[in-house]
Amino acid sequence: MGSLTDTVKTLLIANIIFFVGTLSLGDYAFTLFALWFPENPNFGVWQIITHMFMHGNEAHIFFNMFALFIFGSVLERSIGQSKFIFIYISSGLGAAGLQILFSYLGYWENYDALIESGLSSNQISEMISSAIETGRFPNYINSSNIGAANSLISNFSVPMVGASGAIFGVLAAFALMYPNMPLYFIFVPIPIKAKYLIGGYFLIDLYSAITDSSILGPSNVAHWAHIGGAVVGFFIMWYWKKNSFNQNRWN
Image (cartoon, rainbow, N blue to C red; front, side):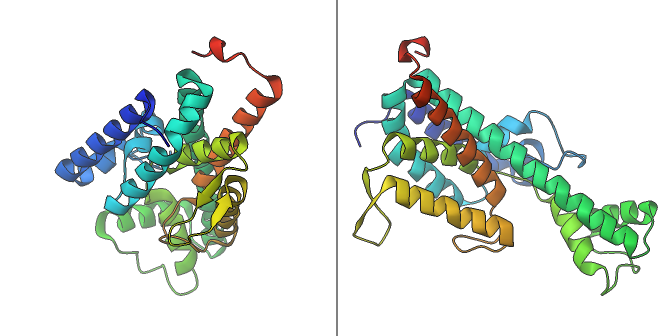
C-alpha cells in the first residue's frame, strides 16, 4: 500500500493521543469530548468534531485506525491532501448528523409512547433525572412502559464516539475510486473486489440499523453513523469524478 501520507499519519497520531488521554481522564474525557444527544446537559457544539477522535476501547480504536492505515494513504495520494481532509471531515459530520437525527426520532417516538401510557411530561423528566443520577426508574415505570423508558434513556444518555463515520466515508470513496481492486477479508484468503467487499459491509450495516440488531461487532455500534459517513463520502467522490475537478484546485 506504500508509505503513510502526512494527513493519515497526523490522524493516526491524533486519535492515539486522544485515546491515551481518555485512559488518563476516564469518564471526564467522555463527558467533555464524546457527542451527546443535543438535549443532554453534557452536549457541546465542539463535540461534533471531537467525537471523531474518541474511542471506547482498544478494539474500537484498533479496527478504525487499521482501516485508515490500509485505505487512507492510497486515497489521499489519489485525490490530494485537501480533498482527502474535506472528505474525511465531511463524512464524520454526515455520520454525526444522521445519528443525531435517528436519536431524535427514537427519543420522541418513545416519549410519545410514555405519554400514551399515562405519564405526564413532568414524570418523564423526573424519570430521566432519576435514571441518570441513580440508575433506577421511579416506581411508576412498570412492565407496560419499561421498554419505552429504556429506549428513551438510551437515546438521551448514550454518547457517540469514534472515527467510524469518517472512516466509512473514506471506504466508500475508495470503493468508488478503485472498484475492482482485489481486497482480502480477514481470515478469508480469497480476493474480493473493493466494490463488493465494502458495498457488502455497507449493506450489513444498513440491515443492522433498520432491524436494530448487530450482525458484525458489538450491539452498541452506531450503525446510522456508519451509513451517514459512507453516503457522504460516496456522493462527494461521485460528484468529483463526475465533474472531473482539477485536482490542483484542492492542493
